[in-house]
Length: 305
Image (cartoon, rainbow, N blue to C red; front, side, top):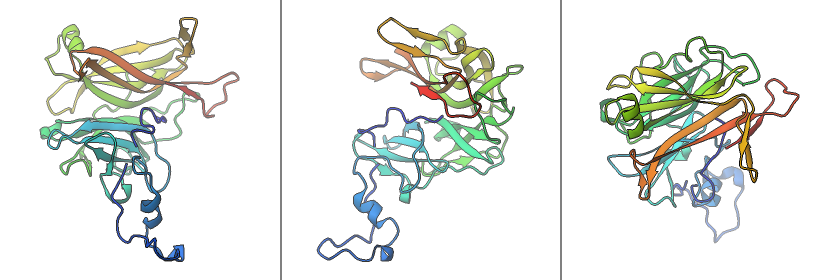
């Protein structure tokens, strides 16, 4: 939930400078007289996804628009904002000034919008965002979890991804799995996988979602769900797809990693030598939260990818 992965120097948004522009043939004016965003648009890096103010959060909600072929790059920022690209080098903001395409403040997300992912042809064939809607804070793996603080909700876009409109209904996944004392339950990542279709006897092309988190006193987990209806309103819980004992490590002697206490931002994708392919080899990336002893509640923990 709190990472910036994969979008470094090469993946970074350019919007055309808007008027008024600075006149470089004259002495600099009183900066207080300049229109909003003048300095920002002048000095903004030309190959960066970068909002005009505030911090940029997790890169997420990426997808290729089936109508335009443009690749959409999203990131957490006052909700979530994004940019598009047709060459993976130059990027253009979806909205003027990097304005968000979704904000917190609805019935399901009165407090915050956390990570999510997009089904390019979802409800009625439109881009459909499946995201974590937040009702209570703080949330941290070192403290007791408030059930209902994180739910998974839907929103659709009918204007090329510039705005995602939340459905007027409750969350599609309203709570973590029953009887589990979770550490977190967020960052739904939707994907298709032919191996899972075969293993679980699902229809070909079924959508799955993996939700990141963990279980208190047991360890980090990924919770697997399966699309249960054509409109993505209902999801079937299939179990803890990946679970590790708390704070265990792994490695081959040359390098070691730590699974920690809580998983975040798990992504599942299948690729072959030509790129994305639901019939290709399956890879999973994820974040792991951990902390050295003594563990202090709500103190920012270490994070590994």
